[in-house]
Amino acid sequence: MSPAPVPEPKIETSPSPESFTEVALLRPKLSVVIPLFNESGSLGELHARLAAVLARVAIDSHEIVFVDDGSRDSTYSEAAALCERDPAVRAIRFARNFGKEAAMAAGLRAATGDVVVLMDGDLQHPPELIPEMLERWRQGAKMVTAVRRSRETDPWLRRQLSRGFYGLFKRVSEVALAEGGGDFRLFDRAVVRAINSLPERTRFMKGITSWVGFRQEEIAFEPAERAAGASAWSLLRLLRYAIDGLSAFSTLPLRVWSLVGIGMAALSSTYGAWLVIRTIIWGIDVPGYASVMVATLFLSGIQLISLGVLGEYVGRIFTEVKGRPLYLVAEQAGFPEEER
Ligand code: UDP
Ligand code: MG
Image (cartoon, rainbow, N blue to C red):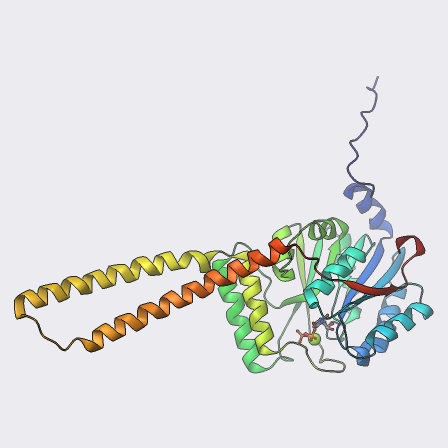
């Protein structure tokens, strides 16, 4: 005789991950999330190629979520026009440019699929890779990252800097980043739920995806040239992004200053002792201007740097404490009525 079944505690209304996997193994619902910033030049081709790919994969249904990150061209009106023609298309328009991280966050929150693919809107991420990513997911991967085989489409300086960044990140932070892993990824619903539950405002998706864990796999791909328009990432913006990423996943920049301080203190006291001894043995000699200047300037330089680093972190604490929303939606189109 089997005991009466104990009712499962109900935490959320969506099905549990297990039943998701079972349903999904057969025919998942697939969402494609695409952040857009001034991408009107590639939107038409992007949609056509996506539709062609999605028509031949074994899925239950699909949706394409365009998030227009405050474009200044006709990106949103074109996306809204696509909503009219294709019932699977949804479009969200931000009130201004909130940045790609915010756009990705909004898209992941709006997506309803059992599987969510995140990709760029400039056709550098070929949609034709989606079937292979889906296959990996069917075999059990919870996250599939498309890693660029080469960075030939990037300028030389940018390639060097990004290699330096990945090297530094690996050494100082708590999570490891997939080198060359851009934001072309497939997520299982369980991962999307985990990412959506993170409240932080300074977001760094590459770090977040590796922080949440789950079974991750990589596949290689060759990025294409941008279909149209120009990259919105200047070197300065990339540098800011790198600092955001490092400070979000490492406190080493904060802690390293105590070590530097101890080192400097040891050095200066040795030097001080030497000065005292020298004065006792050889008497007072006036020329000392150079050493005093060097020590003063060097130490004040170090102090300014450490203050700056403190400032970076305090600034981020400030952003988090203000608790402002990550983005504001101005309008949206293509969503089922009840969600409005
Ligand atoms: N993007 C965005 N908001 C921004 C900048 C970029 O949503 O402020 C989008 C852009 O439309 C594209 C993706 O992020 O879909 C990648 O941008 P981009 O191609 O400029 O970056 P890169 O490929 O040079 O790293
Ligand atoms: Mg690009």
